[in-house]
Amino acid sequence: MNPEIDLTAKQHKFLRSVNHHLVFQLFLLLKLPAAWFAGLKVVSLTNANAIVSVKHRWFNQNPFQSIYFAVLAMAAELSTGLLCMMYVQDDQIKVSMLVVGVKASFMKKAVGINRFICDEGNKIQEAIEEAKRSKEAVSLEIRSIGYSAQNEEIAIFDFLWSFKVK
Image (cartoon, rainbow, N blue to C red; front, side, top):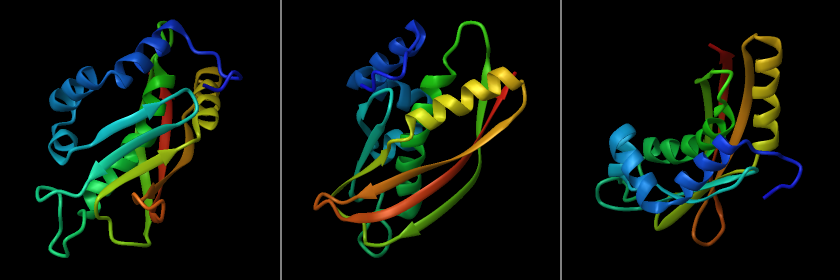
Protein backbone atom coordinates (compact mmCIF):
# COMPACT_ATOMS: atom_id res chain seq x y z
CA MET A 1 0.00 0.00 0.00
CA ASN A 2 1.04 3.54 -0.68
CA PRO A 3 1.52 5.23 2.73
CA GLU A 4 0.79 8.65 1.21
CA ILE A 5 -2.88 7.76 0.69
CA ASP A 6 -5.11 7.62 3.76
CA LEU A 7 -8.18 5.46 3.33
CA THR A 8 -11.43 5.82 5.23
CA ALA A 9 -12.99 2.89 7.07
CA LYS A 10 -15.52 2.50 4.25
CA GLN A 11 -12.72 2.44 1.65
CA HIS A 12 -10.82 -0.20 3.67
CA LYS A 13 -14.00 -2.31 3.81
CA PHE A 14 -14.40 -2.04 0.03
CA LEU A 15 -10.74 -3.01 -0.44
CA ARG A 16 -11.17 -6.11 1.75
CA SER A 17 -14.39 -7.12 -0.08
CA VAL A 18 -12.79 -6.90 -3.52
CA ASN A 19 -9.73 -8.84 -2.40
CA HIS A 20 -11.93 -11.63 -0.97
CA HIS A 21 -12.31 -13.96 -3.96
CA LEU A 22 -15.73 -15.44 -3.14
CA VAL A 23 -17.29 -12.12 -2.11
CA PHE A 24 -16.11 -10.43 -5.28
CA GLN A 25 -17.20 -13.31 -7.54
CA LEU A 26 -20.69 -13.02 -6.02
CA PHE A 27 -20.61 -9.26 -6.67
CA LEU A 28 -19.68 -9.89 -10.32
CA LEU A 29 -22.40 -12.51 -10.74
CA LEU A 30 -25.07 -10.19 -9.32
CA LYS A 31 -23.94 -6.79 -10.63
CA LEU A 32 -21.71 -7.50 -13.67
CA PRO A 33 -22.78 -10.91 -14.98
CA ALA A 34 -21.03 -10.46 -18.35
CA ALA A 35 -17.72 -9.97 -16.52
CA TRP A 36 -18.43 -13.05 -14.39
CA PHE A 37 -19.24 -15.19 -17.45
CA ALA A 38 -16.15 -13.89 -19.26
CA GLY A 39 -14.01 -15.05 -16.33
CA LEU A 40 -12.61 -11.76 -15.01
CA LYS A 41 -10.69 -12.10 -11.75
CA VAL A 42 -9.18 -9.52 -9.43
CA VAL A 43 -5.55 -10.40 -8.85
CA SER A 44 -5.09 -7.54 -6.39
CA LEU A 45 -6.43 -4.17 -5.39
CA THR A 46 -4.46 -1.72 -3.28
CA ASN A 47 -4.95 1.99 -2.69
CA ALA A 48 -2.55 2.70 -5.58
CA ASN A 49 -3.23 0.03 -8.20
CA ALA A 50 -5.54 -2.69 -9.46
CA ILE A 51 -4.74 -5.84 -11.40
CA VAL A 52 -7.47 -7.78 -13.20
CA SER A 53 -6.86 -10.98 -15.12
CA VAL A 54 -8.74 -12.80 -17.84
CA LYS A 55 -7.97 -16.19 -19.34
CA HIS A 56 -8.52 -17.15 -22.96
CA ARG A 57 -11.42 -19.63 -23.00
CA TRP A 58 -13.90 -20.88 -25.53
CA PHE A 59 -16.59 -18.60 -24.12
CA ASN A 60 -14.65 -15.33 -24.54
CA GLN A 61 -12.79 -15.99 -27.79
CA ASN A 62 -13.14 -14.42 -31.22
CA PRO A 63 -12.95 -16.30 -34.55
CA PHE A 64 -9.15 -15.77 -34.58
CA GLN A 65 -8.58 -17.94 -31.49
CA SER A 66 -7.77 -15.05 -29.15
CA ILE A 67 -9.75 -13.12 -26.54
CA TYR A 68 -12.54 -10.98 -27.99
CA PHE A 69 -11.68 -7.27 -27.75
CA ALA A 70 -14.79 -6.47 -25.72
CA VAL A 71 -13.68 -8.91 -23.02
CA LEU A 72 -10.29 -7.21 -22.95
CA ALA A 73 -12.09 -3.87 -22.62
CA MET A 74 -14.10 -5.23 -19.67
CA ALA A 75 -10.94 -6.35 -17.88
CA ALA A 76 -9.20 -3.03 -18.54
CA GLU A 77 -12.23 -1.00 -17.48
CA LEU A 78 -12.62 -3.04 -14.30
CA SER A 79 -8.98 -2.34 -13.38
CA THR A 80 -9.68 1.41 -13.56
CA GLY A 81 -13.22 1.20 -12.20
CA LEU A 82 -12.28 -0.64 -9.02
CA LEU A 83 -9.97 2.19 -8.01
CA CYS A 84 -12.68 4.72 -8.83
CA MET A 85 -15.28 2.75 -6.86
CA MET A 86 -12.98 2.57 -3.86
CA TYR A 87 -12.37 6.30 -3.79
CA VAL A 88 -16.03 7.31 -4.19
CA GLN A 89 -16.83 5.39 -0.98
CA ASP A 90 -17.80 8.17 1.42
CA ASP A 91 -20.38 8.38 4.20
CA GLN A 92 -21.10 12.10 3.76
CA ILE A 93 -20.65 12.97 0.08
CA LYS A 94 -22.08 10.82 -2.71
CA VAL A 95 -20.10 10.93 -5.95
CA SER A 96 -21.29 9.45 -9.22
CA MET A 97 -18.84 8.02 -11.71
CA LEU A 98 -19.27 7.32 -15.39
CA VAL A 99 -17.09 6.34 -18.34
CA VAL A 100 -17.54 9.05 -20.98
CA GLY A 101 -14.85 7.99 -23.44
CA VAL A 102 -12.46 5.22 -24.32
CA LYS A 103 -9.43 4.76 -26.59
CA ALA A 104 -7.69 1.47 -27.22
CA SER A 105 -4.60 0.15 -28.98
CA PHE A 106 -3.87 -3.53 -29.53
CA MET A 107 -0.34 -4.86 -30.00
CA LYS A 108 -0.56 -8.67 -29.79
CA LYS A 109 -3.13 -11.45 -29.79
CA ALA A 110 -4.47 -12.11 -26.31
CA VAL A 111 -4.17 -15.81 -25.55
CA GLY A 112 -3.52 -17.63 -22.28
CA ILE A 113 -3.84 -15.63 -19.07
CA ASN A 114 -3.63 -11.86 -19.46
CA ARG A 115 -3.64 -9.14 -16.83
CA PHE A 116 -4.58 -5.49 -16.92
CA ILE A 117 -2.84 -3.11 -14.58
CA CYS A 118 -3.95 0.36 -13.58
CA ASP A 119 -1.55 2.15 -11.24
CA GLU A 120 -3.18 5.57 -11.13
CA GLY A 121 -4.81 5.41 -7.69
CA ASN A 122 -3.21 8.69 -6.59
CA LYS A 123 -4.57 10.57 -9.62
CA ILE A 124 -8.01 9.05 -9.16
CA GLN A 125 -8.18 10.02 -5.49
CA GLU A 126 -7.10 13.59 -6.33
CA ALA A 127 -9.75 13.92 -9.07
CA ILE A 128 -12.52 12.66 -6.79
CA GLU A 129 -11.42 14.97 -3.97
CA GLU A 130 -11.43 17.87 -6.45
CA ALA A 131 -15.00 16.98 -7.51
CA LYS A 132 -16.04 16.96 -3.83
CA ARG A 133 -14.37 20.33 -3.16
CA SER A 134 -15.56 22.12 -6.29
CA LYS A 135 -19.01 20.48 -6.58
CA GLU A 136 -18.28 20.45 -10.34
CA ALA A 137 -17.82 17.49 -12.64
CA VAL A 138 -14.19 16.45 -12.96
CA SER A 139 -12.94 14.31 -15.85
CA LEU A 140 -9.82 12.19 -15.74
CA GLU A 141 -8.21 9.94 -18.33
CA ILE A 142 -7.08 6.72 -16.68
CA ARG A 143 -4.80 4.17 -18.35
CA SER A 144 -4.83 0.40 -18.05
CA ILE A 145 -2.13 -1.65 -19.74
CA GLY A 146 -2.66 -5.29 -20.66
CA TYR A 147 0.14 -7.84 -20.44
CA SER A 148 0.43 -11.45 -21.58
CA ALA A 149 1.73 -14.24 -19.36
CA GLN A 150 5.12 -13.59 -21.02
CA ASN A 151 4.93 -9.96 -19.79
CA GLU A 152 4.47 -8.56 -23.31
CA GLU A 153 2.13 -5.61 -23.82
CA ILE A 154 -1.01 -6.78 -25.57
CA ALA A 155 -3.20 -3.66 -25.29
CA ILE A 156 -3.48 -0.17 -23.86
CA PHE A 157 -6.81 1.31 -22.86
CA ASP A 158 -7.42 4.93 -21.89
CA PHE A 159 -10.76 5.51 -20.18
CA LEU A 160 -12.15 8.97 -19.65
CA TRP A 161 -13.99 8.91 -16.34
CA SER A 162 -16.26 11.68 -15.07
CA PHE A 163 -16.84 12.24 -11.35
CA LYS A 164 -19.66 14.43 -10.05
CA VAL A 165 -21.15 15.07 -6.64
CA LYS A 166 -24.78 13.91 -6.53
